[in-house]
Length: 257
Ligand code: KIV
Image 1 (cartoon, rainbow, N blue to C red):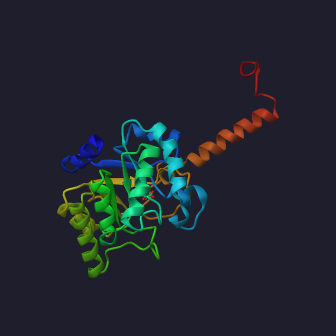
Image 2: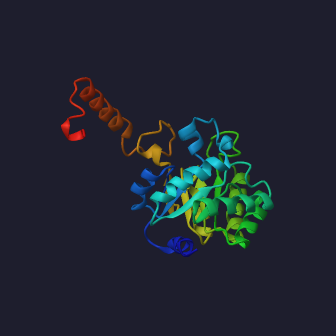
Image 3: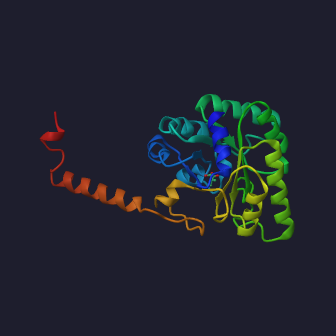
């Protein structure tokens, strides 16, 4: 709870909040030093399992990946996505959120939606389970992957939902693929941190899928910036290993018993 409160207070800090995803221990351990929040996102469905949508991600998958991530996260707050169909009503949500927290020792859960899931969110928070909200493009229910907030009615709904989520007690909200001026309006209106992904620099912080930013996942989305080409580095290392083995240069005596 202490980490969650500290995170919430970052709203008023001058420095931006840094968030990234992780699906395993080794990546989590590297990024932990630089992050405020590490999310075990259900994006792992498409990134690791080639699922067409996140709908096929199960609670067990989220728990197993999160158990691995937990071993790498020391400093950041660790948040786990509640997968599709794991929070259809308050009772189901509470049972599954409790399971996620007890098995993974994460600090909070994240779930998608506004007014429709407000009772679920209220129930979790009443039971001392910290919740992160997620508005805008909602991959678990999206019919297309277009950005949100072009139409006035849509803008009003998203702004209203952000206020409802804050009133329900979420400690932060992810804004995914939201038009810039709407992201600014939400960020100025609510008193909890907004974390953007494709939602402009007006948000209090940013999140990206780590595999996208390091060049391991070949996604072509406007909101992704690639900071590294890990695929090339792995390829080069494997080629060197192969060459050494073929030429009997590896293993040497140094690597043998
Ligand atoms: O599943 C995920 O990785 C996410 C982020 C894109 C915010 O929800």
